Image (tube, rainbow, N blue to C red):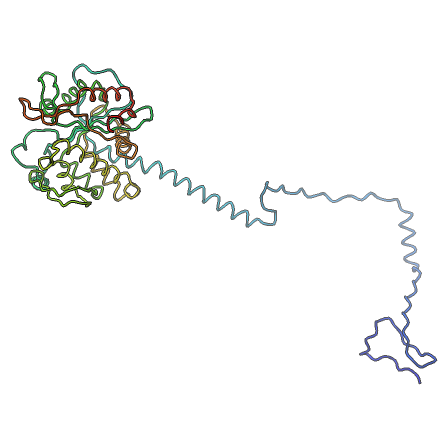
Length: 407
């Protein structure tokens, strides 16, 4: 039987041929490779001509200079990525520049707003003065002057009465800011302290202010302390109340209820928010306090600490709708000595904040007798030895040593 040739569906590899065997079975043999053909006439002539011609050196194509890649930058094929990175970098630099401008411009504008409202008076002593002492000492005075108050405000603050004429001091304090980095100290001077007043014999220290104003009070404090008063800070009834209202009120925690008609105060015991009028009464009252003027001095320092903490809080400083009105109200409520400058005011505010903080020192001049009988009525007699020790510490700028007197 003769074998049939393979059909188109046969999966035999291409190049294999079928043939018959003696047994009639198909067998596969590899196909022979086609025989190589000899080159034609034209090809032989071309090869001969190329072999006989002189060889020309090949001229290399000019190489294109490679663009150097930026160190650590993206490859040449990623130009969009590089462009986006440049845009992001520029935006970041612009944001940093804006923040730097705000960090400088905002505090400067705030400080200038307050400074532009400040009043200044001659407050330096006209007598012989102590030598300059290290650190900076501020004399702080809270007067009961009604200047600038409307009849409605006088009634609101319970500031009427027989003593409405003239000026007296409800508050006298010393703020010492050391130059050596020690704690700032806020020291109350009881207004009834019995001391010698230059040219007027001995009297209660607030009489110096009533007689000769800020210059005589400064001279009196310098004479009894040996300290050089560097700057003078004063505020009145209305100014104090407006500052409290400007910070949104302060929280105070009286240990007992108070009903004092003269101060216009009627409050319950316990923590409570106080507005300007209530805080002013809380700082003024003494007839309902068994400690009298000494108890009032403690409350005044507590109030100043609360006002300073509230005014320096981020919630106040970072809110321009609260910070700028506060700067304006605070500036108009404060009177400084005529030698003071804007940096001096800033130093005072920083010193108040430090003295009212956890590391600050808050104390009263050491007292021996709070009910000293004198020709001018009951007065406060200092503990002379301890008071002189305190003033010596301040003159040496050693505020840390004051802690032994407050223990």
